[in-house]
Length: 116
Image 1 (cartoon, rainbow, N blue to C red):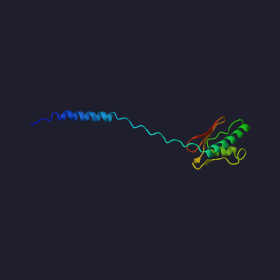
Image 2 (tube, one colour):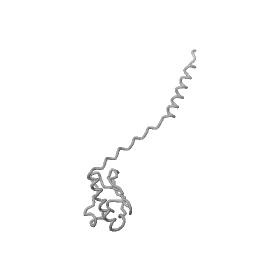
Image 3 (cartoon, rainbow, N blue to C red):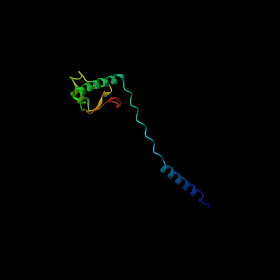
Image 4 (cartoon, helix red, strand yellow):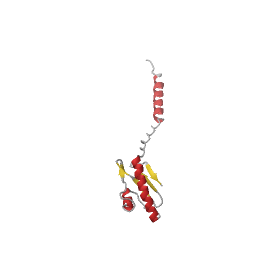
């Protein structure tokens, strides 16, 4: 009878290499998020309009009105500082964060339109 002793080391080597390959496998890098679209000119114009109303309020009260939404800003600024506050565009509502001494206006995609 012929011995299969030469076959055993080859199988052992294949098992060891497979184990090392599985154990050393690098995780796939995560794909970066899609880029935020650049603000449109109309979004920038709306942001400047909102900022002008905020500055008018700050001149009268010495601070910006604290707000976390467009609805908060509408309540504070309409109709005395602006007839109709731009709320958003076809992409969605603008995101605002206003403290007594700073503000940030973002489009629905998250791109900063204006901050102070």
